[in-house]
Length: 459
Image (cartoon, rainbow, N blue to C red; front, side, top):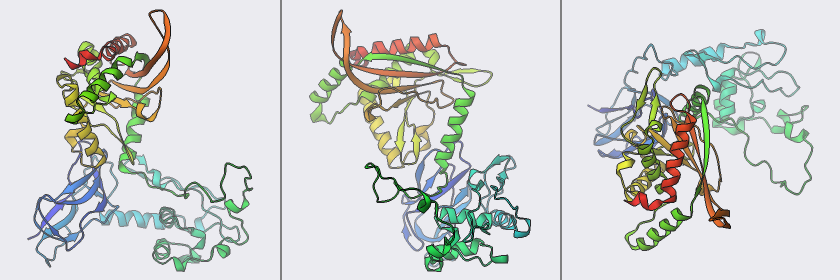
C-alpha cells in the first residue's frame, strides 16, 4: 500500500501552502531524506522531505497550486501501483482560507463563468465587483475594465477568462470566442495558451483602434533607448510570503503607535577592532561582519535596558527572560528574519558563525520554523547597500526594531578639534504602548556605549 505525503504545517500561522515546483516526477525512485518539492508557506519557501523509500507513483497537486494543510500531495509506493487521490480534509468553520479542493475550485469557476452575460452587460464599462470569501476581498479578482474590441465595442469575455488571459500575458482581443454571441470563455483562453497559432493577427485584432503604445508620442531624449520597455507589462499573482508581509506590515503600521529615535555612533573603534581580529584570525577562517557586533551589542543592551525586550499582549506586557535577536535577510520574493537564540549568552564569534549559517539556509530555502520564530528583538541592516539612514517597521509582537545605516566618512569634532571620522546612524522604532521615548533613548545610549567600546563585547 502506497504512503501518502500530505501538506505539513510548516509555520505556526500556516493554513495553506503553495506547491512551487516538484523536484521529482512520477516514476522517479525516492529514498527517505530526498527532497520532493519546494513549498511556499506564509513565512518562507522550503523544501519538502520524503520520509519513505519507494517510487513516486502519483502526484496529486500540480506545481503552482495551493494546498490545505493535511491534503495529499503525492503517493510513494511500488512501481506501477495504482493510487486513488485521497479525500480532501474538511475545512474548519473558522477558517477564511481560499477553497483548495477540486470541487470547491469548480464551484468558484462556475460562479465566475455565470457572471456578466451579454444581456445583462452594462452600457458603460465598469470594473466588476470584487468577489468576497471569508469576509475579505480577494485582490486577484478585482480586474480592470474590459478592453474594447476591434471596432471599439465592449469586448465580450467572462471574468474568469479575462483573469486567466492576464495571468498568461495573452491579448484577449486576439482570441476568438466560442461562447454565446461570440463571448470568450475559459476554454478559449486555455486553447490559445496551448497553441498560440490560434490567436488572431495583431493588426487585425487592433484594426480601427490604435494600441496605447502606438498612440503614445515618441520620446526623443537621449536617456531612453529605442529597444522597448524596461520589462514586460504583466499582472503577477501575489505570493503567499508577499501577501503575509503586506498583511503584517499594514497591521504593524496601523495598530502600533510609533516613536522613532536616532543616534550617531563613532564607528572608528568598531571598524578598527574588527579589522584587527579579521587580520589576526584569517588563517582560522574568521571573518567578522559589522552586523555580528551589532547583534551582540543589541543583546547586551537589552540586558542593560530590559524594558525594550518586551511584547504587547493586549491586557498584559510580556517581559522576556532571554535576548533572542532576529536579523533581516532579503530573499527574491520577500524578507525573512532568522533568529539568533540567546544572543546575550554567545560570543561575537559564535554569533558570526550562527548568523552566516542561518543566512545561507534562508537563501537556500532550508530554514526550519524553529530558525525564524521566537525572536524578541530585530536588527535590520542596510549599511552594506550604502543606505546612510532609514526607519524599519516593527515585526509584532516585538516592541522594537533597530535600523542600521552604513558607515559614513565625514568631519567630526574630537577633543575640540575637527578631524576626519567614521560615523554610523542607527534608528530605533519603538512601540509606544510598551515603553516611552525616554526608555528607547536609554537603550540607544547603552548600544552606543557598547559599540564605541567594542572590547567590552569580547569579554
